[in-house]
Length: 414
Image (cartoon, rainbow, N blue to C red; front, side, top):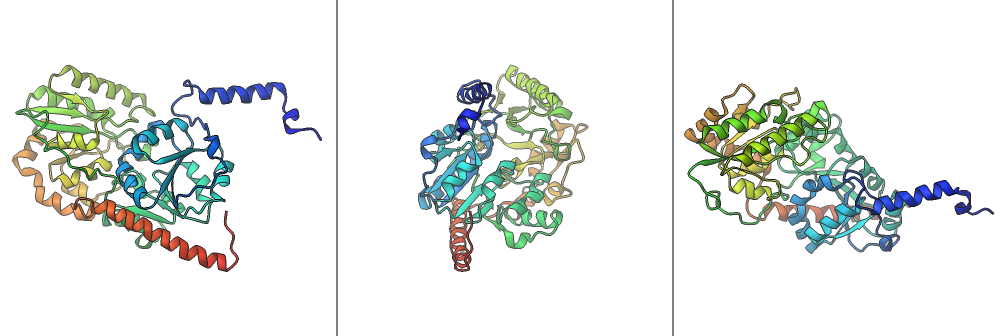
């Protein structure tokens, strides 16, 4: 019988060799998974009962980094293995978090690992289509964590139906899903756990570092979004004018925190981002934050201007003034309680006057504080991480009970 290798012609063998070399080189674009598998781990059962499945690449690291603290705490109680499709992303996460990370190239390799392991719970941080490689397995429960929720349309995606449960921050998320997702029992399948991905470590007082006599405005816009219906970014429409006005006023210090994906879809967003960076860098005392932890940016700011995004809910517990931009496109989920409470800004707004008014009036702090429990839950130090761990363990118990019943009936799952 002719071997499979013999049936592959010389040109195809060269092509496969070249692809393998390219994947292992530093020239493969960062946006393409290199699929360089950890060969020594293939087919070897894992001992961890929890799997984090993260199929996306390095430009999505912003999605996993805020979860490090919660995942490390979970790993100390219930060991976690993180599975990747890109070895470069895995290497970064391994170095930064200390989690056990393994890279696979093909679905069959995931099958070869999981069919010999007793993984009880799978966690997901985004809706990447490659998640379905792991969602096929019926021997574990699948939970969507996300990487920050907001009043964006993506927070009410029909894709949540693919998962057994969805962990959300507060009641606002459940109400939002009930209002927008058909034929989905959000009251049963959505479990509030607060914001475990928001750093709980102590942060400096906002006036203790880099303090000036001027109050500091943090402008943290979102990106343009993958499609028009979820385009909430203000950069292209009026971001340059907004930042320029604040700097020119001389009354405020500006911190500009761009979204890491700004400009990847729409070049105009990239150009606006570059213009704002240059404006800020040329103005003494102002800065661009691209490497600081977001909690550090928050700590050094007195007011936040952001788009409809998860940044607004992360900021909300600070009690400090908040301004949200109106989406330039017709993309808003609707009149949320947050959007009804905080001042809104568009291209015709005098941003300097609006910022001043928030400080003069105290920014309606009482009304904002009333939203905290509804949107983000218990803010006691460590409460969200503790609940995250507790609920994960509850999911594992539920899986064991359910799997035992299925096996007793002769069910066999992959």
